[in-house]
Length: 453
Image (cartoon, helix red, strand yellow):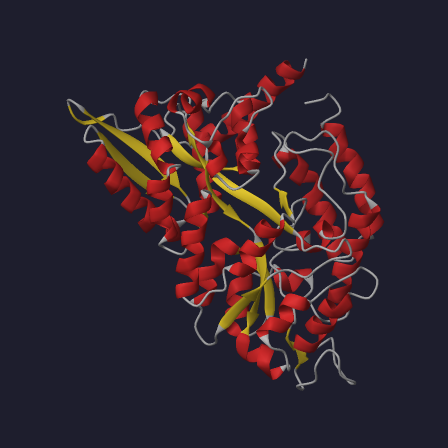
């Protein structure tokens, strides 16, 4: 029964995507009689130079293979990828995300590389602990090798920080709790300034007319909340689900989660964070940070260099605050490279994926100071590269060192989960519903997994 439902759902999704497919987009097969051209897709333009360099090095070592890199924006990327799959013209290799890969494994669209990894003698212990588990299917297969990792940190406007009377090292000592917000809420209040120049912790503060919000965000976070509420919930003794990967029950009704969202939402009511309508008005969170409308922002390590290059002010980054459980909280996520099951060149595609997951490529990418590669040696090199650019990479790495990270949840029904949790969390953050309503949303989520899938 479960297989029948999945096939019907797959057919429906792929049929819808087919309408957007581009005609005649098969992977280019050859440049010459003996040369195979592989199409490789990625979404992050900032990382393109590093991977183009890897492609050039790979081609030099493998003269019979050429790599054609194509880059699409995040939203368009997944729409086009699904459309190309239904048209049987997907790229030979593509960058995969932990929240997407379960769906494609369920569709049978990604190759299991377990045997190839074993035959190649690849030492999977070279990757940061836990990352390899993001790419294991329910069938025990392995569908990717880790290429990088990410955590989140607290970015801040350095000039505003000094004006508020804080030093960068003070932020490493912040703590929070859901009762009164702790020293973190005191900090956010201090960083908030109304149009009359009154700070959020001073008498006469006008929360209805705020010039600078102490803490910004981009949207409610739905069921993931990676750069919104996750650092607080995860440091409050909460976890997304009963197990990961392939959870069967989720924790959105857990009291620890409900009280976290209640406290996080209270920052809006106090005027320290913008209303949801402002946060989602079309002006990006990073742009608001750069323009001085936000004093601080929880954001991912993948945007460290981009934020450091924002004009108009200098910016720094600190780790997320310590929570009630005595630790900091962050999602520990990463990407891999997947081989399309329909590629006519599986051996060449594997050679490219193996190279992407190798020290040679990951050390090269580390020099770009854009992301933290998954290989431990390359992580160290990336920390050095970030530091050389004036970015405190230790703010992201400290939780990896402490072992206080939480793996991104992996399921083949993430899109369905989000159709429930996104409007549910939106309603709470917009004060249209109470945090306790998340328990009812969680019941609907758990019903998705009631058949044991």
